[in-house]
Length: 210
Image (cartoon, rainbow, N blue to C red; front, top):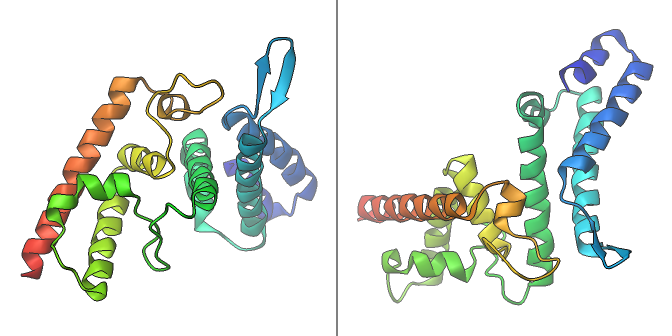
């Protein structure tokens, strides 16, 4: 990515395209496989293909936008390319799940969605009989607490919000351990640390608000 961005200084369009082709292939390879084998046949998973294509398109857009005018969003891809792609993939995955489960989502134009699984874990910190204004304020605090988590813990929460299980025995269903490249115990530890930090953050927010 560093060398691709350097082509701006010498207007090396040919070199930019060659490097772009390499990086685009790397983005696609970093996404979970969009096909699986059942018996002797290869089946394309339309949902995973959509998420993969959306991720590739997102990173592609960043590369071309940055070539025209510096885009700080591309900085992280210089430092930890595969991890940045994984994060982009999870974001796209969450958006697709949110669209498919729109009737179940608790969504706000300002704060984004906070699914029931997260709210249940934080329920003891939610004051009873909230007005609409207080409820929005609570959701803002929750969203702020989630955003403040370390990347590995926030990814687990994001996947929970996308209804991705930590582990699964269902054929073709993705799991956190597969998407994050970790074992089940690690995923659960990250989840537990994340919940503890969110609960602590909410407790401090409420105490400070008194």
